[in-house]
Amino acid sequence: MLYTLMHREVKVMELEMNEYANITALGKVYDAKHLPLGTYNKIGVDRKTLNAWWMNRSIPASRRGIRSFLDALELSSPSELIQKCFGLSLSDQYWVCPSDMSLDWKKVNFFDNGFSEDIGDLLFGKGGTSDSISLFSPDNTANGNLKKKWKISDGKRILIKGSCAPFFQEAYNEVISSLIAERLGIPHVTYGLINEHDEACCFCEDFVTAKTDLVSAAYVMKAFKKRNDVSEYEFYIECCESLGVKDVRSQLEKMLLLDFLTVNEDRHLNNFGIIRNAVTLEWIGTAPIYDCGNSLWFNKVDSHINALDDSNIKCPLWEKNPTKNLDLITDFSWVDISALDGIENDIRMILSGSEYLSDTRVDILCNAIRTRIDMLRDTISEWVNKK
Image (cartoon, rainbow, N blue to C red):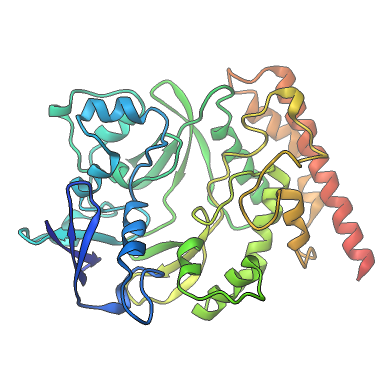
């Protein structure tokens, strides 16, 4: 079927897609400036890369509970859902318009218009039969392995995320990470706790607006050719600076410091990036830190929690683990370590709200966080002495 790739009201290019939302052919390019970053080069649009970018909007096949979800909808693949909402998302302004339809972005986008929570409810194990469910939902384009859903509360777009067995700790970790970031003055997305379908979840307000795009680090790096003599870390900084994004190194170092404190083992190129004005195409800056749930030994048994040694934590970004990533930080002058005094008491209160975390595990986690803070204090002292 033929579609037009749209960026808000701007026609970008013609596409042909099959029933599984795979881009099978490319057509006329109307406005190359509005093509998704990283999907084109000097030769033109790369179909394989554009298709990967498009399919990344889909609920992943690795999402927990996805099989029963698909069975309830009588679908064979989650990618089939993308076209049901025209690819509309709450993370950017891209979508597709079928060639046989005349759609107005102002009337269909999820930032300004309502949407069904049927898909989100079904992802949480609730909901009706396939013939009674509305498929027009931003949940169709919410990727990630944890179950999640969007809802509107007081006019705001709120993302709700669950946790997974055995400790169901991820939601609490998001709240703790945002608390630490708040104390240190690190730009971040603020998370709170909410009960959704009798399950403790975290929630946050959408930091993307109807006029902005979130562009992941992965596609920032695809937009440029890497030299052999530069590390991926430095290459990412160069890419951002080439686009005119300022203060990248400083903000990146703040993310690495937060990930060190929380022992985040799931920081990857698709859960941080930069923000662009979707209307003017001007780059605004780095995105606030988000998606910190897979941290604080979230899936480790108590006896495997060791704050002094995270060699068994395999971080997919830059270096081998969160502690090694700390070596990339060049400036600690902004850190007021005293701002974290007593934070373990607040963290204890947060964790104590979980029915899945024993008092022993809560004690171990609070002590481990204090140890990580002390390790950071020592690192800063060494840095000061070397100056």
